Image 1 (cartoon, rainbow, N blue to C red):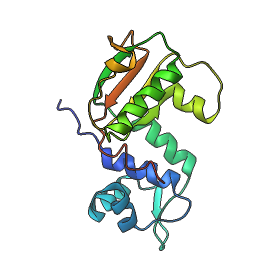
Image 2 (cartoon, rainbow, N blue to C red):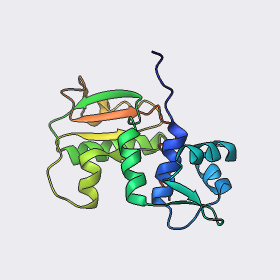
Image 3 (cartoon, one colour):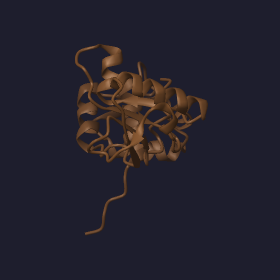
Image 4 (cartoon, rainbow, N blue to C red):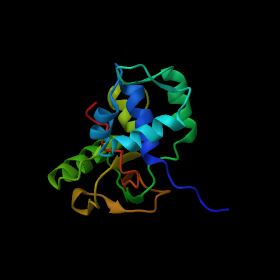
Length: 169
């Protein structure tokens, strides 16, 4: 058996349409995702029954069902992960990592429990995760490299090229 290629663009189209408040033209979706209209059309074709063209653009026929489909298929952003350890609270570690990444123009995206906690505090996160466009050295910020299993903070350079594209929707 040969490994399947990741369907990054189809998954991005799904995320885009789950977030879209109104029907969206393929050209608008393509521009937002940095791909071709043909790629968006191909993705929509694979999503028959979940996505329809209502004449004014593509729309999710049932957002909850489309989100569930995406959740069941999306393999995660993949990529190269780097573990960091510190005794400081996880929220402080994430803030330091975000500050350094912004300084280096690495477009940080906070994920996991810490991201959920920023929206609606509900538990004390034990590990932070920050997606960045390139490696970031946090040794000068009081963190030390650590195996991923023991890390209190993970920075990751995702393989999913669309991860940073939907931030401003």
